[in-house]
Length: 224
Image (tube, rainbow, N blue to C red; front, side, top):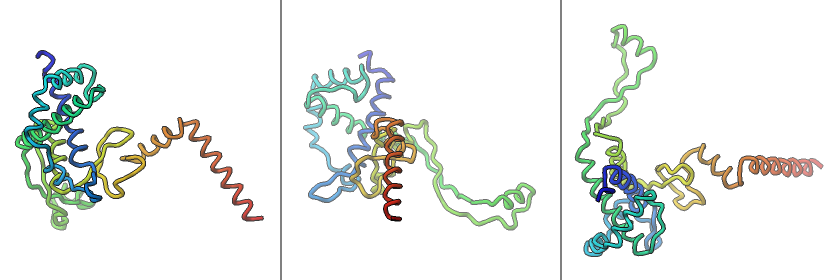
């Protein structure tokens, strides 16, 4: 169909990235124990069930609807939502494999120079330069999406949990506690979350003033 153009598949791949984080990297319990990302990646539905959902004409029509109003914004029937979830996870598996084949990795040496050492090197004197600090990899890829899938692959290989920030939508590495009232990636987002939870900046300032007033009142009572 003409709506299945390059922009469509770009939107689908970005959504598949989000699906990969949710399906594989977000902590989930089974029998009261958290599954590691590797375990979540391996656990999958039977192939026949996935194929059946993907072959659903109703599901394909829903996929077109999702694209026409914005990926992930449509509210459909349970069967349609299940199809999209299965489709995105399978697309993520393909992208993870296909994109990684186009990435080149090179071993590199990282050296930490002080200002004086760098100045001497520029003058041609490298007699007292520090030894290498670390060995690492330099990656080359055709685009940013390839590197995003590389991040997902690294998280899977190292069993690193991740979560989507409730404020900015970015993905960040998640350590314990895995269950939180809100998933926040930075101090800036934490501040924005407090403002949002309070009902706005003015409401938050009023709350803080009242909290400070109560605190001062308690301190005065202690003095008495």
